[in-house]
Amino acid sequence: MKKKSFFLCCLSIICLPLVYGQTNKIAGAWRLQDGDIQHTLVMVDGYLAYSTFDIKNKKFINTWGGPYTEETQQLQVNIQFNAQDPQDVQKKHIFNIKAQEELTTDISGESTNWKRIDDNDGPLVGVWRITARKIDGQLNDMPLRDRRTLKILSGTRFQWVAINIKTGEFSGTGGGFYTFTNNEYTENIEFFSRDNTRVGASLTFDGKIENNQWHHSGLSSKGEPIDEIWGRLTEE
Image 1: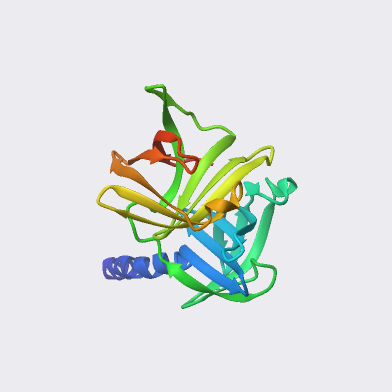
Image 2: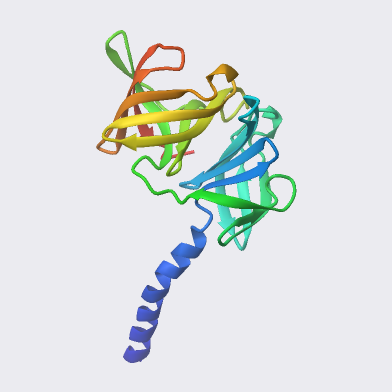
């Protein structure tokens, strides 16, 4: 009996990395190209952001997303934002999904194969929210509310969204790819819902991680000084 228990214990330990790997194959950033239209899908820490845009013509089309769960090749998404359809917020959608070297899913409306961009490797990977902002030299705490600004980062992709997860109000978004080296964070903008003239621009900020907080300072896309602290989103 003891030998059998020992064998089962060892077997479960051996299988843990396999099971973990299977359930995390979809995590990371993915791209689907359809003519000039680019689709990007970022999945990190159980949160999803799906965006469509046209870099060549500097046109933002749509973005939607929220928390997701995966089970038996199905993806369930609890919608927290949808730029085109605020009525979609707080609804649940289920998609087919299968990840190997490519990601096969009908999330775009038909079953297609997506190319992997990255696999969530980097110190900034996660879903972040502003926890404090300096105004007139004073650092002001910002508690989590229904109305919130999030940054969703994979290993190379970034996207910010200003949303209200209860009313469906959508205030804006922007995204693209980023680098983070030597405490310097640079965003390279590929879409911007508020101002398409920002597409192609790069913004560089001072950034550092301390006590699992992201200290972020520099000039905004409007040239205004910003000094913020971001924390990881730990509740929905």
